[in-house]
Image 1 (tube, chains in turn red, purple, brown, cyan):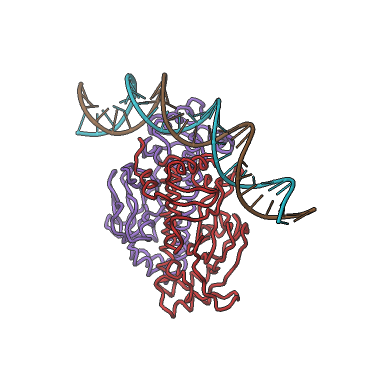
Image 2 (tube, chains in turn blue, green, red, yellow):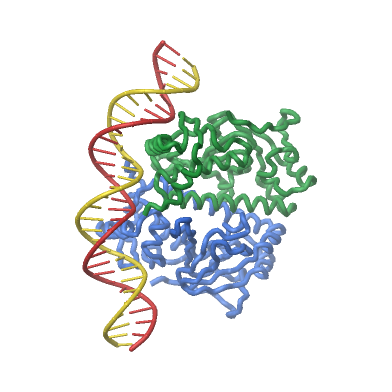
Length: 245
Length: 245
DNA sequence: CGTGGCATTGAAAACCGTCAAAATCCGTGG
DNA sequence: CCACGGATTTTGACGGTTTTCAATGCCACG
């Protein structure tokens, strides 16, 4: 179904070779020369998580950021009223944990939605190294800035789109991120529940389900539980541009 | 009305002395010793804006970030449908422009909502300097992380609160930020229109107006156009905890 | 003193949430 | 391997909240 990119592993120890990682063009390692890549290698260790396991929790002390090697994560926050609010879904090549820098404590939970592997980068070492490697510094700043921009896109989605627009945008976004990573952009398994999608998009799970059914009836997508096919991407895009008011 | 903090200015030239700025405990200069502050001084120039003037626009090339010295700003994005979406309101001590790092172009517009002054920091120089001054590097990272966390708080607001909760949260947030800066936390002038508030909170201007009127009738706040008094802060806070569902 | 932007208020409609029930899926243990 | 039970998803009917549309009022500014 998903045509996975094979990950070259010289051995199954905890060391990771950024220099040989096929994600290095997506990750912090972008633009580093070989010598600098080796320094990055020395800093990074690998960690595996089973589905459902948490990488960190809100309130945990912050000492590292994580690059996702394989797998799929969600980040969420428990609001004061005890409701879970999903703040993001992350996949291979994306960075987790940057929210913790501001207060030295993580403010959200990060949970693996499938069996996953991350690269752990001790933050003090990353700071140290990025003072010496200009392109690492620049790349790190770009990643933080990108997260700011991404969060703002979501603010726009939450602030100005109606339910079906949000869900169309969500599917197109997922599809595009799959494509970038070499997976099929037109069919994939959702790793999250309808409730988690709804929480992320500011909707109730029933609304998500209804929109999926409607898109299905209109021939825009195929839906079989968590298995989704994008049948008419242009049709989905049209839902976004079509100003309702 | 607003009891302004007086800004000591040795002259009205374009140089700025971070070392003498009364905002240095809010700004990037936190934790720097005198020697490092002088280096920061050398990098920074001042810029004044009239109400309504734009500091930068979406699409502008990114070469600097800005620390607000005095005044009040909004950032916004024009969506594809041509609607303005406000992404934030910023006041003294806060940093503008970090969204531009990721693509070397600004993704939003920054507009002064009153006559304002900013400190311009050329980004390449800031990168250079933060490779040499550890506490500047750390402070800069904390500011970026704080923006990520702030954006996530807004996502929660937009994703899980109803209209009146959002507006109560908005007023309390403004009030608290005024207090931190030495202004009155219980009475202030809004610098933005109802429409801009609504855009920021994902509501229509009529809904904002109605909530203000309702809070007014309940004795929670005083409203005379843009002049707001917080009469019962606890009452406003109570609106947040009270889970509606 | 008039004009135009901004704010307030009302009534009706649209959209999404709530509640409820049934169907389907998945993992576990027999 | 199959059966079971809990979690997840789908679907329907209804109600509430917010938007939409419209009219009026207020204020700042020229």
